[in-house]
Length: 561
Image: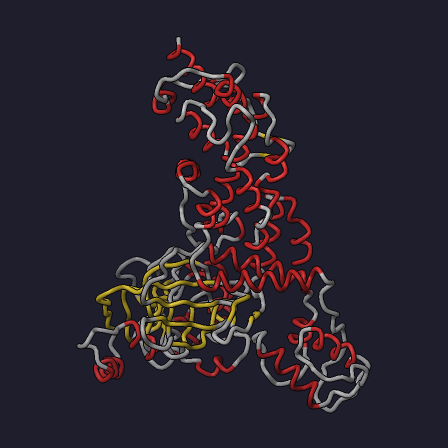
């Protein structure tokens, strides 16, 4: 009889309860627990898990239904946290922890604190079953949200190909049940990265500012330069005084004087803007971002740190796309730093991690079809000699052995989008778009790091100019960093290879992790909070996606927008 009852309970959890589709015997067998006497509590939990449709308590959905069914079926539907008296000893510590979830950029109500508290001490079996399920779901949800994030990156944008840690909610619940301190166990899922901890402190400060009403806007107005007088200058003074950038006492003066200029430059310095003291379009836009939107940006950046693995690599390369920077990190030495050029808004640089495994000196460049269609075709229509002038060979197709063609004999206006049938390859040389070296980590996007002959573009402040690849400001320094320990590849040998002009592939003896990241908020080495323009609207897209999944966040999403 006991065996039969247990089988019924497992069928219940797997969808075989009356009114649901029956589960097969093969599906049931792996979940059969050790035999034990079934209790009213077991049956109540099994009934709750076996109902059709989503599992809801107090109108709030428990998101881990499949994992809950597996977890409880494995244990024969015995309660995990509650006893017959209606008490769950772990509940107070759990509730106290999740009520502070905001400090992690999370929403406390997603982890059922009120529903758990209401059911503490209630002895009826149905309520105890709900309490047990609520606690388990909260444990699963909080741990996964804290470490791996609330959304799959590609739910936000297809170019967000980061791979968050894969966590098993069922395994989390098992381990939590065995932990001597549940709150300490869950806190252990906090991302280990120093930048995450720094952003958590920043979030606390900016939440306080936003709660107090934020700062006044600088408002609209003309371009302001030192020495000018304008009716909008007092608003500028008040805005900068509110964030501590301007310490002057006279907030009413319409004169753009030297102390105000210094304040503007200070503001520009931690917003990634050119420090010219001019209040132009970009500076005014940054000044007018409200504190509530900064809170949303900080939360979005904390989430993106959850997408990174615990170990970034003892030696690694990190690109901050909206910061237009590359950093090479190695133990015991100062980080390598350089400016980069990243993708345009139309062709954004993707976010993901990989490993650089080889370099190509004097690379050829096979022009991607999208670049041929969008960039090369208009140039050919204007100048059919463009390919020859830039060392680009035209082939009749992408097939091996395809014959070469003279672009000057083709009517490019009539070719139109069919240009992608042709293959175009640029030979090594001073005009090659990849410069003298490219750094390879084969990936689905076919992007990589590379040199560029257009060195003048690194002087620009906003550098979203490429077709998705990352152009590096100091390719020789990056090659030296990546080839550390390859004694046979001296600086002299690298120069000889480059001067010879022949394409040469060099495999690294040890691949180096590379992380293409999107950090619009970070804390620099001096402890200063830095903001960067959300060039691809990733912050806003994240908060909008989160609001759709978790409606209680709607107010934050509205603030970001």
